[in-house]
Image 1 (cartoon, helix red, strand yellow):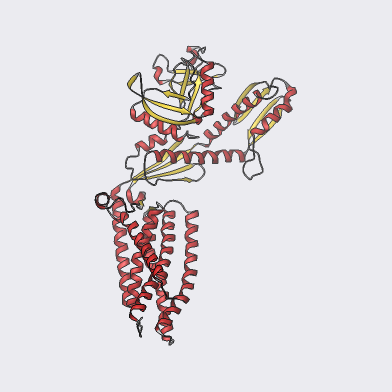
Image 2 (cartoon, rainbow, N blue to C red):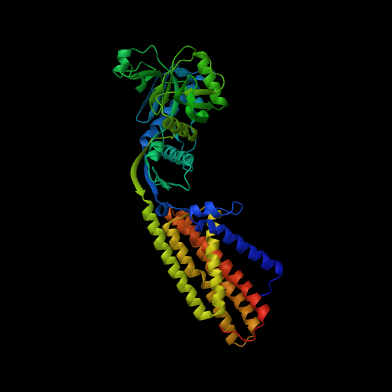
Length: 536
C-alpha cells in the first residue's frame, strides 16, 4: 500500500510540476508575463468573468409575432414554388396572408388533390407533440387555407431563438472578446455578458441589426406618385431608400423572386477600385447562390436591382452584364467602420428576428478589482487558518497535508486554464470552499491512522490500514459532491455554472493530492527514517 516505485514517484512529481507551471501565468500580471515568462512554457490563463474583469451586460428580447410573420412569408414562397414546379403546374390566385394564415384560390378546382399532395411535403412534425407544424384545409371546394398549429408556432420560436443565439455568439466572437457568456433566458430572451468590454455601444450596434440581406428587382413600372403615397403596385412592395434623398425617398421592388443573403459564404470590407476613398463590402455566394445570382443577372441585364438590408434599400445599381463568378460588391454611404461592421454581420449570418435591448448594465473594472482583492483576502486568511490548524493538530502529517493543499490550489488553476474556464465571484467562493474541504480527506486519513495506532498496530501497518480504510469513505463522500456539482452545472446558468466548475475541479484535485500526493510523502519518509514511534 505504501510502496512507491521510482517511476511512480517521478511521474507524480512531473505531473505536479506541470500543474504548477500551467497555473503560474494566471497569477502573474499581464505585463510581467509578457516581459519575463518564457514563450516555450505553457501560457494558458484563467479568464475572469464579468463581475471580476468588468464589462457589459445586455438582455435581448425577440418579438414572437415577427418570427411568426416571417414563417408565414417563407411558407408563401415555398407554396408558390411547389405549385409552380408541380407536374402539371398548378395555377393559383388571390393569395393573401392575414392573421398568421396563408390562403389562396386554385384556378382549376379539379387540381385540389394534386395541390394537397404538392403541399404536404412542406409540413412536418412539430417535435414530439404528435402535431404537424401546419394545418392544411380546403374551403369552398377550391380555396386552400394554411394555418400554423400551436406546436408549430412554439417550434418556430424555439428554432429562431436557437439560431439567434448562435448568430449573436458568432458576431461577438468576431470582436475578438474573451469568454463571453451568451445564454437563453426564458423562451424569448438572450443574456449577453462580455467581460472586459467597457463601452457597449459597438456591441449594441452589432447586435441591434438583423443583417437580413436581399437582392430584388426594382419595379421601374411603378407610378412615382403612388409609391410616394405608400401604395405599391400588385406584386411589388415599397422600401425606404435613404440614398435617393428627397427626389426618391422610397423605391418599389418586386416582392417575389430575388435572392436572400443566407447563401453567402464570405463578406469583407474593402474599397471601391474606381473610387479608393469609398468603403465597400465584397461578398461571395455559395455554389447555389452563385447560380441564382448568375441567372438573375443574366435574365435582367440592363435592369436595376435593389440591395436591401434590414428593410432598407442601401443601393439600387443596374446589372450592366451577367455576374457569373458568385461575387458581388455592396456600396453605399459607408465609413470604414460601418462597412467592417456590416461585413461581420453578413459573415455571422442574419438574425432570424429583430432583437431589442431591454436591459443594459456596465460593470466597471474597479468593482471587479475590489471583488478580487476581497476574495483574495478571504482566501489567504482561510488558507492560513487551515494550514496552522493542520500543523498544530497533526504535526508532520499536517505539514504533508498542507503541502498537498497548496499543490491542490495550483492544480485547480492549471485545470481551469486548460479548460479555458472563466472565474467569477461565485467561482472564488467555490475556490475558498475547496480550501476548507480539501483537507477533509487528510483529516479522515490521519484520524484513522491514529486510531489504528492506539489499537496497538505497528507504525507502518497503522499507516497502511489508515490510508486503505479511509480512502473508501473519501471516495464515497466526494462522489456524491461531484454529482451535486454536475447537477449544478447542467441546470444552473451563468455564475452558478462558474461555481460548479470550480467545485468539481476542486473535489477531483483535492482527492488526488490528499490520497496520492500525501501518501508519496509518507512513503518517502518511512523509507528514509524507518520510525519506531508515530506522533499524530
